[in-house]
Amino acid sequence: MKKVIVALLVAVSVWAAPYNVGQSVMPLDLSDQFGKRVTLTTMPKTLIMAFEKKTAATVNEYLAAQDRGYLAKNKAAFVADISQMPKFIAETFALPKMRNYTHTILLIQDEEEGLKFPYQEEKITVMKFRENIITAIEFISTAEDVKKAIEQ
Image (cartoon, rainbow, N blue to C red):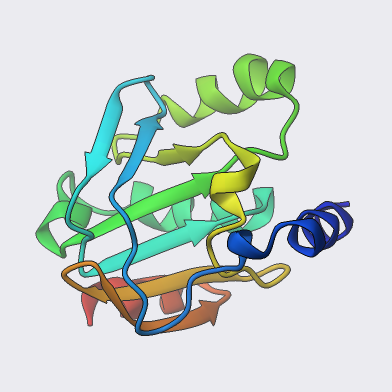
């Protein structure tokens, strides 16, 4: 379903093409799982992104096993795109579960915002930055891959 929606929106909106290596990412203004607004004016060294329930679970399980402050210590952030999730499901089930985590989960709730980021089905997107410039984009699958991406 996501692939069909993505294809249609990209076809009618050239500006919605995903970011590429070498591009600058504008400051991100997102909410966390508690509804607190977080503005990333300078991107972290590593941005971990999940666009599906399964990939988000992989990242959340790994991060939940780490010490508090792990993401900040490694200059990383985790973003979950929940824009495809029906609002009722997000508010009733997903967000309450996310609030049990001690790590911050930044949320993309606007579909157009989500389309700006590279995505591969059943993969976790890892974006590396120097200031706001993307230096690398990688697609990973496992918790071990998440560890390597964050700690490198």
